[in-house]
Image (cartoon, rainbow, N blue to C red):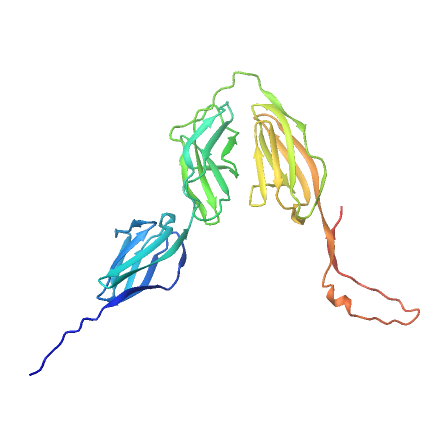
Length: 334
């Protein structure tokens, strides 16, 4: 007589992620995988930021052949977070997690766009920063305008502020405005005005732009911060433009341009030789243009180029011999 004994093998569940952090770009496929073991085969539950993750048209959740996975076909910034996998069978349980960061363009600035200080040729718009920066540092905002009877948008300005003063409007035209936030991955969606804005005809007399305080020729030191400020009058407020070597200065990571109705400041966070040159400040109203010119020079400490090659050489010359010694160096003094 042969007896058979059924042996039930139990194994506590175990999870192994191949990585604990995942960085990906918006619009790409995101795949989170974990090797799982245990007998009987454990049940799997995925959580994202503490809430149960469920499958949908963009998200697939599978557990097969010892691998548990989450696949998101088109990831966006909202997919960033902490993903936790919990497994359990009758012999025990285990859990593990992975941090996901999706980088892409920022979300739209928070609206509505507020339009104030409306004149016959200008207005001021205000907004709030986007709720999500796309997991990349915000570089600033792009402001555009569109005539109500046209379909194309025109660039107005880039700014690091959440306000912009828009000039050069016509009181016979209605306008829409929109603003996008920008980071290293590009510009995100826009927030715009839902109704067209009509500049108002001025009821007060115009005043030509006039500079009351302006920067003079300036010398700065390489690596230092420099702020150039102009104060002016004018009614309505004139358009302000800064130029270097006849090229319009646009804000970037190192340069900020701030403008109000009576002043403007050009700030260079860290000076270098590229900031040396001829600067020109322009105030422009509907009928008048005012200019102011000045120079900026950037000094830098002298540095011997390839100094090591001079430190160990011993040169011997004959008495009465003509000798020319050459030393390469960099540096600028004004």
